[in-house]
Length: 311
Image (cartoon, rainbow, N blue to C red; front, top):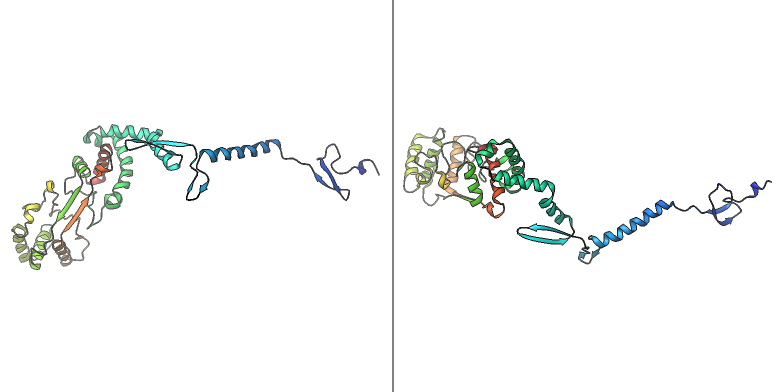
């Protein structure tokens, strides 16, 4: 047998070294250490973890957690707030100081400084209005007025048609947002008889071209103009409404609070309008000056106007 044959594993020049422990002559424990670069990488992750635990929120403690040493400063209203590092505070700061936020704020101030006539004619301004206004509308308005401003019949007005109780000019829309609106019509159940309610309802439907009983229409016109109902005081002699008090036009066949078009026939329409006259209605839109800045309200007013219902 040659000398080479008598060597144990791990003793050759090109072989991986062993620890020197052997069993049954050829069963040995190799010494194959991890690469140095891998070890340093592992040590680096340990150091990184320790630094992270110190700087950022990390470990749960009872009902809370370690807050870390890192902090975030942002503005809340007119105050400067500094809090421990967290993603919510970081988002607030980025929304105020990020590159996109700064450009958005500059554009908001630029558009808000323009007259409505200029905004509506300026392609860049309207591009910003549509982008920013859509987001603001989705946050503050869509819950009531629905996507696209279609509204809900019997609940919230449609902003995409040309039926505006307080006027549809941009300035009037802005005023409504700043001040809020309260729409009210009293219920006539205690002032008019059932027959009078049916008659005045038939008269109002006839103003919109619906085929109603002639005698009921004639009697309803007297109720409409008479002292007991007093409809003429708010809706005018011709039934076209008064913008200054938010009284709607009763002659344009646009029904915000009564689903007239959804009724099966004229009799069903009469019943629906009569029920509304009997019960009355009260609706309120809050004043958004408590939630939005003047600049935001102006851009949002221009966006609502662009939905298709502006005058």
